[in-house]
Image (cartoon, rainbow, N blue to C red):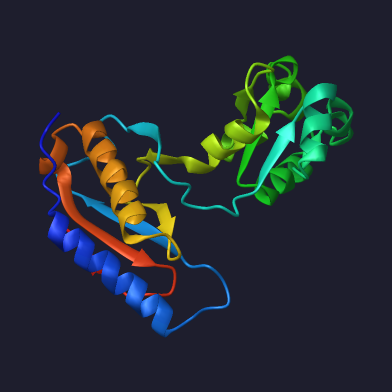
Length: 218
């Protein structure tokens, strides 16, 4: 693994500034802290478009909404936990209607599906969830739903499309400096590992809170 070129001091200063700004100017909602990445020497047309997911040490977006596409047992568990859930019957009612499937995809941040349902998703819903980049993750009966949901909430995705700028949520302003520091480090080092020439492809790294100013960290 290539050594991280992220300077701890710079990152800690940036986090302190973000936290200070957010306390001075309290918003009515919990601001997300996002990481913005600028790439260089990369041609999205020619070079391999990478995609990868990594689980962060702390959940960056606690209020992320997840819907379970479940069998009877999973729907029962979901209901007891007040987690939105849909059965096969509910999915059939959408009748593969593109508009309705698109609406469903927009309603939630992510989806989980029981083993019995996951293979049927394309047949029941068509390609809508996949197109939205929200094809469900698998949940089995060996895992607890709580853990699985937290795992999904803690996982971030880096995907290069056509633009050389990427951004992702790495935390929120109510986290401690250390929690943010750990999350940002894990996120940056994982992203760099996806790049063809690692750090040589990184033009800039910035962190900012939803309403705050951009802080350059690399």
